[in-house]
Amino acid sequence: MSDSATPAPPRGLPMIPEASGALAIIGLGAIGYFLFPDDLAFLTRLIGITLLVLSLDLVTGYCGVATLGHAAQFGVAAYAAGIACVRGVTDPIALLGVGLVAGTMMGLISGALITRFRGLPQLVLSIAVGQLVAALANKLSWLTGGSDGLSGITPGKVFGLYGFDMYSRTAFLFSLGVLLIVFVVLSRFVRSPFGLMCRGIKDDDLRARMIGVSIYPRLVVMYGVSGAVAGLGGALTAISTGVVGLDSVSFERSAEVLVMLVLGGAGHLWGALAGALIFQIFEHIVAAANPFHWMMLVGLLLIGIVVFAPRGLIAPVMALATRLARKGDA
Amino acid sequence: MTELFKARNISLAFGGLRVAQDVSFKLAAGDRVALIGPNGAGKTTLVNLMTGDLAPGNGRFTMAGDDITGFSIAERVRRGLVRTFQTTRLFQTLTVADNVALAIMQRRRITRRVFSAATERPDVRAEWLEILALLGLDRLAYRQVVELAYGQQRLIELAIGLALHPKVLLLDEPAAGVPHDEAPKILEAIDRLPPDIAVLMIEHDMDLVFKFAKRVLVLAAGRLIFEGAPSDVTADHEVRRAYLGSYADARSAS
Ligand SMILES: Nc1ncnc2c1ncn2[C@@H]1O[C@H](COP(=O)(O)OP(=O)(O)OP(=O)(O)O)[C@@H](O)[C@H]1O
Ligand SMILES: [Mg+2]
Image (cartoon, rainbow over all chains, first blue to last red):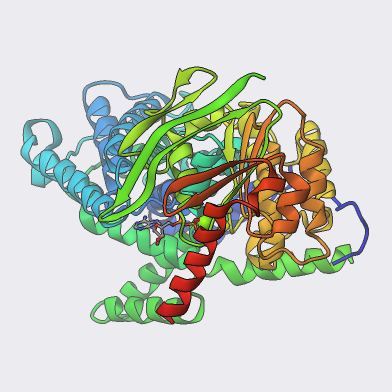
C-alpha cells in the first residue's frame, strides 16, 4: 500500500479484459483445431455447454440467484432453433437469432418467477420451472419428437459459403466465433454500471435498495440477458449436432453446469470458462479411459476442489494477480 | 422554514413490545436534530420505519406534503430520504470506490447502462475521490470493503449517504466505532452539507450532540418524551428519569 494521498487508477489499458479474453479463446481454439482434429465434434458440444455455464454465471455468480433449472433457457432455445430448421429456416445465423430470442423470452419468464423469491423457495421454484419445461418437451412430442428427440436438423451454409462437414470443422469454428463474441461482449457488460450494480445486489440487497435501486426489474433483465446467452448455446448445439434431445432440458444438465461453475469459480467470467473447460475435458478423458469408474473420479475431483479451493479454481489465480498488481504499485 | 418530512402518530409493536408509541415530529429545511434515548428505546426502529424497512402499525409519513407511507424503500431514497446504518451494510466484496460510485451513479440515473464505464468514468471518479478525501478514505479507494477495519467501514456508510445528495439525511450513530482522532471528520463532513437539507442524527455521545444539534428529540420506550433546545435537555425531569430508569433496569437485570 502506498502512502500517496490520491489513489492511482487501476493499472492497465481500457480494453485489456476484452482483448485478453479474445486472445485466450482464439489460442485455445487454435490448440483444439490443430492438435485435436478428431475431437472437433466433442469440442463443439463443449462450446455450447460453455455458453450455458457463462449464462448461469450471470445470474448465480453476479446476482446471487440460486438456480437448478437453468437448462430450461438452453433447451427451449435448442428446440426452437431445431424446429425452425426442420420447418425450413436453414440459415445458421437466422437459427442463432431464433435461439437468442427464444432463450431471452424463456429467461425473462423464468426470471420474473424465480427472482420474486429468495433462498430455498427460490431454489425450489427454479427446479419446478426446469421440470415444467422438461415435461412439456416430453409431452409435446408432435413438435419436439418427445423421447425420440428432434432429428433431421440440417442447417444450410454459414454465410452461404461454408457447409457443415462430417469432421465438424465448420461447426467448431462457427461455435468458437460465437463464444468469442459473447465473451468479449460479456466482459464489457459485467464491468458496466449495470453489471457492477448486480454485484452490489448480490452482496447486500437492502443496501442496494437504500441507495434507491429497485431490485426486481434488474434481476429480471439480467435473467433475460442470461437467457440470450444460454439460447445461443442451445441453438449452436442444435445446429452442430443435428439433434435435440430431452437431455438438453434435463435436471441433470442444470445440475452439471452449476457444478462446472462452482468448480471454476462463480462471479468471474474466467471462472465459468475454466470450470466448463476443465470439467468437460476431464469427463471426456476419464469416461473414455475408464468407462466404469469415471463418475467416481469426477466426484473425487469435485470433493478435492471444494476442500482445497472452495471459491473455485479461478480464485487463487485472481488473488495472485491482485497481489502482483499491488506489488507493482508500491 | 419549509417542512421536508413529517411523522404523524406513528406506532409499532413487536409482539407485546411497543417500540413506537404515537410518535409525531417534523423535520424542516436546515434542521440539525439529534435523536437520543437509552439503549433499546426504539431509535433505530424509528429510522427503519421512516425509510420503509418496516411498515408502521399506525400513522403516516409525509415528505414535502406527499404521503409516502406506502412507498418502497427505493422510492423514498429517490425522493431524497437517505439513511446510514448503525450496523454497517456495505457491498462487502466491492472496493470502497465502487461502493461510493454505485451511489453516485444511481443518483445520476446511469446504472441502467450496460456498456459504458462505471467507477472510472471521469466525472464519477472525480466525485467519489472528493467524498473519500473529505473523510480521509481516499488512499483506501481500491481496497475491498471486507479488508477494512470496522471504524473505516463506518465512515464509508457516511460516504455513501453524502454521495446520494440527500434532502433528509438520517445518521444512525455515525461516530460509534470510529477511532477518536477520525471522529471530527464526521462533523466536518456534515458541516459542509448544503444548509437547506435536514439532518437527523442518533447519537449517544453528548459532546457530539451539543456540537451538532440545534434541536434534540428524546425517545424512551418508544415514546417521544422531549423536544427542545440542547441546553434544556439535561435539565428536563422526564429525560433524567428515562435515563436513570434504564440504568436502574440494567443494574437489576445484571
Ligand atoms: N425486528 C425486530 N423484532 C423484534 N424486536 C425488535 C426488532 N428490532 C428491534 N427490536 C427491539 O425493539 C427495541 C428497540 O430497538 P432499537 O434497535 O430501535 O433500539 P435503539 O434505540 O436503536 O437502541 P440502541 O441505542 O442500542 O441502538 C429493542 O428492545 C429491540 O430488541
Ligand atoms: Mg440503534
